[in-house]
Image 1: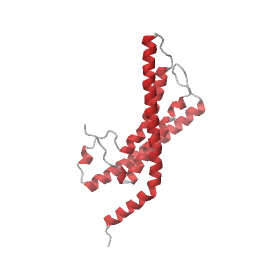
Image 2: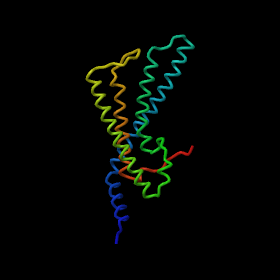
Image 3: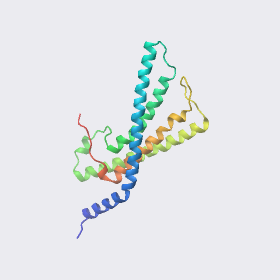
Image 4: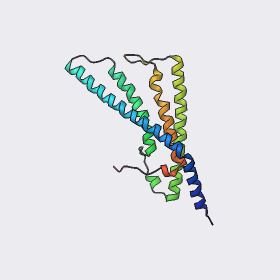
Length: 184
């Protein structure tokens, strides 16, 4: 005879088994975005070092490095955020949730992951619409060297869409929630 908790566990296991390939693809895309983010951070560091040398050793600062660093920083942040969501290591004030009994805490964490996923999806949708508008209008940045604004904005809907999918995966499969919290 199976009880309600056994049925829930079996249903959760089936769901996990069905969604495992999707989660693997999502995690691979998220990891690739994170690795690109790390490379962009390396490029930012190299550009800062180059700018320091050009400015102080040769008294010839570049006109483009400050803008480029700013644009790369946007991409770096938006491509790293999904990995933070995947690992559930974002900044969170959890004193209330941590004080709840196990079953209630699980339900609250699932609800929070679901609502965060839906909100992030909404932000991705709005950002995608704005990016499409920028693409069709041809608006340029106001930097020293003007580039199409959508080149920079493109990372915002991509990043938020991946964050949304990661939080939704956390809500669908509680085993992905984990508690990889670092103590300060």
